[in-house]
Length: 267
Image 1 (cartoon, rainbow, N blue to C red):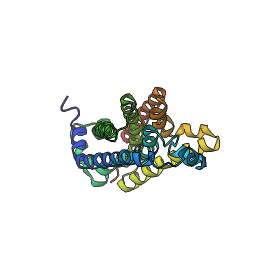
Image 2 (tube, one colour; image 1 turned 45 degrees about the horizontal axis):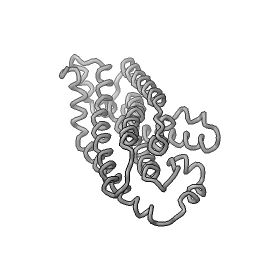
Image 3 (cartoon, helix red, strand yellow; image 1 turned 180 degrees about the vertical axis):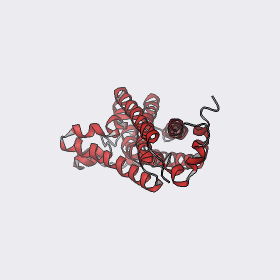
Image 4 (cartoon, helix red, strand yellow; image 1 turned 90 degrees about the horizontal axis):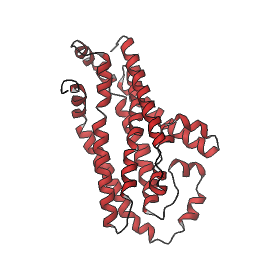
């Protein structure tokens, strides 16, 4: 088993510093948002009226349902921005270098000179993303739960756990988008920029589609199938959406394997 996942472990070890940095930043941002909530609650501002005054596209993009509860505040001010957008873009960006970096530097020739198949290279490079996602999704919810207790608020533990568990299929799908682009080009910067642009474009497609009444457009976007506001505020868990994201991820990884296996490598 150790030999089977050696490529994945090696790539994951190279990401340790980036994983630690990202996890720390997200944890600090979560702690800041939690600490800020009591002042928002005590401000006396009519946030419900304020929310209704926002453009529909903005409310849809950041899942603004309510700011008067800790669940609604964290959903719109932290999860929709930090997890759906920033974390999704980051994972797509990582995915864009998984194969292209080795091709660009010529390391892929040395790797394929050993008894390693192209399929294994693609699959294990992709699996190297999993430890980063797991570490972040263990540390951040712990910070959220402890922080909420410290400021004298309460939040349903099962909803916090669910919002992080359901983020994993979404983030893996973003990484798979980057992976496909990583096998389509031998230039790492092109693959990574393309991954960023595509994931952001899909985010905007779902946002504009929902705000304009053409919701069917959003079916193409991973963000359609992961809604932190629904989980935290309404306690609605979209397991069907998680299955759709998982199937889409498997299909994207399959496409990446197929393409990389049939094309010549050009550094």
